Image 1 (cartoon, rainbow, N blue to C red):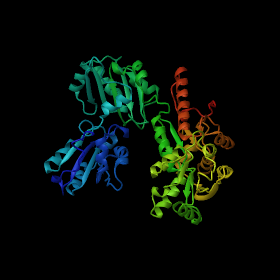
Image 2: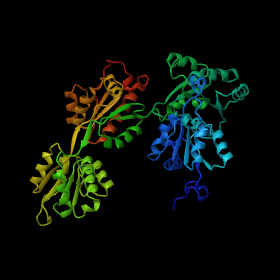
Image 3: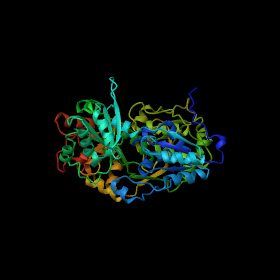
Image 4: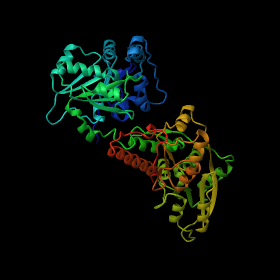
Length: 556
């Protein structure tokens, strides 16, 4: 039996009729750093109150229909300084709680260290409104960890945390006199001033320093310098002046941030596709698992549907076939896509049927993803190709019709409106009768927004994954041809040929016709590219950062 958290049970009856507030730490920016308790609290919230950037991190775990009242800035001076004062956050929390609602007040980092939620907690306590605190990963701890900068070692180095916006002379004098690690919360354009304060207080100018912006997100960037050289590093790298100068950063001062050590420990920014914007031109339903895989490589997937799925123009044929499933007309049903599973499932639900209607019928799936969709439906396929995941691979393993063992000789093949002659002909050759039924139609999707189209044509994407010839044709048709600096990755030779026919140069070819192998191949390409840059002593850049017209090697 798993241990139970004292905070995971439903709200106690003593609170019935009264509100409840959860002050929740959302961490530095990576949604994966939310705690299990945070996810649970978000799922039960009636009202979710958070700054816009925090809302982006936590919203995915909130239930549909949760209220998210907007926090607006009222202090112009603070806005100019990049430190917005939020509109009556306390009043919003209290108003919702007084109404008997479950409120989650989400803040960046940790509520006790980063979120400045103390005033709101005191307001709840003063009115007797019950509240709880769900700690989060503090910015000053999470960001250095993602930057590859351990704050302590086996010698037990002293660690000091300083907020440069509120630090006074006494604070700077204390950390300046220490030889421990100093973690400074500041803004990009105030880093040099903070470094100057530390040097003036006694720290040596050659003390190592790292500065990290957008920590724990795929926009993260870290600079190595010393207290004495950081201003020059920013100037030479044209980091400043910048419109982003007000953005918060975490600076780590001390030997733990030495560049030689960071080169070995920078696990996050050294991911093979770190920060790459990767276009995934697929149907929305099919893109999720692929996007998750790309994120694990450090990429930022951007899903653009190129194919829309619609019901058949004449549904009668599909309706007769589904009724035939129930009355025992078929020995087999063969699914050649996730969309075919979805179409049959929807028709089942329309008739009040469920997976039990497949009892006594053998089920085949063309590949792992289609099989997974069936399992999600409650059906375990009897046949999945042991080799190539395609119609040809399915036929390789399909048994011939045997009148002794097979009481029925008919196969139901729900498919797209695009013909499947190979599978039909192969099954007939094996002695089966086939009901080849249009279960859904594939049509070209609507064009993506203007900024996405511009990014595609202007080189704003680092890579595009093409998973079929139709995704090539449809993407070019609805959005234009990808820029020549964009890495083109194709799932197989036929897709690559279509891409080349459209004037695209194919850089990556998947070793197998699998979307996950395709993503893996792109990651290997990115890794080789990164290693080549480091070996040549060049900075590691993304393809979209390359100079237009630079030569690109073909890699398969």
